[in-house]
Image (cartoon, rainbow, N blue to C red; front, top):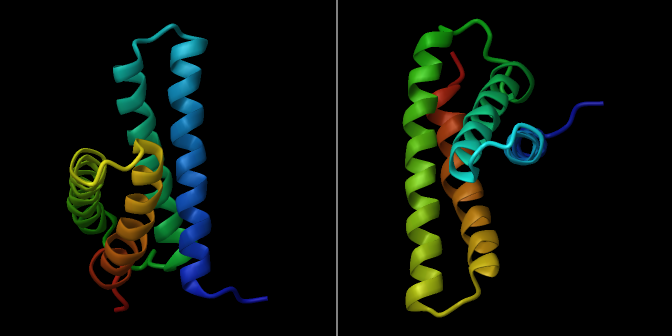
Length: 127
């Protein structure tokens, strides 16, 4: 059965989030790492997971140059982190929303409106 690319992208994003959280929590609880270092490592592991799933599973873009894709993905990933941080700050500080609600809403908006579109048309474009 063929699943729509958008659905596969959401599964990839969810898997990357799980990897991020498992690495972060594992580093803190098992390796007794500092939470900031663990958060960075988790974020990197999640990014690598999302890139790999995007390349092989979501967009089937293995015929394209992986280094070029990786460079484009890095730019999108950094932009996504900036948009998420700024959006959560704005919603929490300016709109006085709960930070968890802010994070969920901003994450969904950035995920659908920024990450998916740029991955589809910029990082893994059809050849």
